[in-house]
Structures are given as structure tokens and as C-alpha cells.
Length: 324
Image (cartoon, rainbow, N blue to C red; front, side):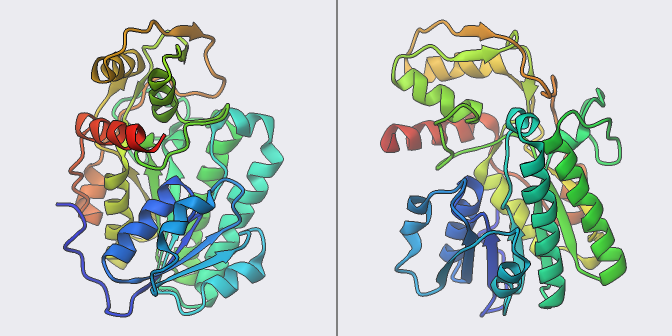
């Protein structure tokens, strides 16, 4: 269970791209706590310096300010690296609909640059962030790898393209790639601000400020909300996975199904708030129902998530109470 007992080579060196972001900074922290070397690559377009300022005094930590759209930067960052955890990307389905060219440039070409750099520099494992959005309009629950529909947004398409390149780089070049299809990750250091903020931190902040959040749609959309600790586990276990499972994508979730309106009521109850939400229009490109089959990740990666929704949301609430 978990990842604390995982052992890597004594001098193991990890590169975390997008390491100043929400997921990336948590990966940096976990790996440093395990005693291994971490290089963080981030251009700070989405990440925040304060997320990684926590590590500046750690002799095993190195920060490179750089953009994955530069192959030269990617090659330099991969020098001497054993494992790449590629989290650098632009997120948000609605924003991708507004800015498809940027998403293609960063999420597709940038990730391709990183795979090419990892191949060139002899990296052992290349683990990259994919997304549950690749399931598109396929309605069957739970979502299962190999049963995808038509993608509904440029963001989803970029993640699908990443998976295709991951498959090719294994088959053609022998690079061990593992795509992790994240399902609605939440937890400490997730940004609650801005028009494209994720729903959980946004709602927590608004409720703490006694403001009424907007729920897009009728609130009956469901999500497999996944606490950050489960995502850390999946990334690190992918680095230990057999080469025979490389070139594939895996669902990373808890395997639950929470309706937005129920999640909102639980937040109100836990925070001691009685605030009626405002219901707004549906968001374009959103998947209505989401729930993951995680049996493939369990079998091939040894993934065994400890954190269910309730345990994770209580930990997240405590973090935001102390840090907002």
C-alpha cells in the first residue's frame, strides 16, 4: 500500500517537468522526502515559485526555469536523469477550446520534445500525465482502457496524441513510457484562483469566504475525485513497472463516483456552512459521468490507492484552512 516502501537506486535522479505546479510540486516533495535527487523543470506559466521554494535548501534539489517547447532545454534537463515524470502541460477543457493552438504547441510538441530528450539521454522510464478526458463521449461506466470515444475538446485531443506518441516511442525507440490517465486530482497546493480553477479548491475557498459557488449544470455530473497521494503512488510505481507493460496508458483514480451536488453538500457540512449554490450553464466539452476501472493499473503497476474521497477531502480542507 502507498509508496513509502518503494526503493530505487541509491543515487536515483528524477526529473519532474511542471514541477512548480500542483501535482509536480507534490511529486518533488515526495521524492526528496525519500532521499533521492530531483530536478524540477518549469517555466512558471502555470506553476508557482512558492510551491518549490520549500525545497531550495535541500542539496538533492535543482531548479531549471525553462520551457518544454525548447528541445535544447529538454535535452539539458534530461542529462544524468534516470526517471522522467512529465507533468508539464496546460490544463482545463474550457480554456483549451479558447486557445487550441497553444495547447497543441505545449501539450503535444512539448511532450514530444521531452520523449525525444529522454530517449536521447538514455532515461530508464518516462512517465507522463494523460487524462480521463481521452474517454470523450464513450458513455460506458466504469471507464476502461481500450474503450474510448470521440474526444470533446482540444485538451483531450492533446492527451490522446501524447498516448499515441508514448506507444510509438516504446515500439520504435525502446523508451519505456507509461501514460497516467488522471481522474480529477485534488489536494494540497492546488490553485483555487482564476476562471479555470478546479472545482474542489475553488468551492472550498468560496465557502470559507461565505461566497456562493457556481455549479455548472444541474450538479448531477459525477467525478472520480482522486487525492494527490494516490497520484504520487501511481507515478512512482510506474517507475518500477515492468518494461513489458510500457507503451500503454493506465487509469489513475480511486474507483469512486461522487456527484457534484453531493460533494458540495459534504463541503458545506464539513465547513459548517449553509450556503445555497448558484446553478449555471453546462461547460462545453465536459464529460457528464466519470468513474474509473483501475484494475489494469493494479495488475500492471501494483497501484493500490489508500486515499478514498472522504479521507482526501478532509485532508484537503485542513490544508486550505491553514494556507488560504
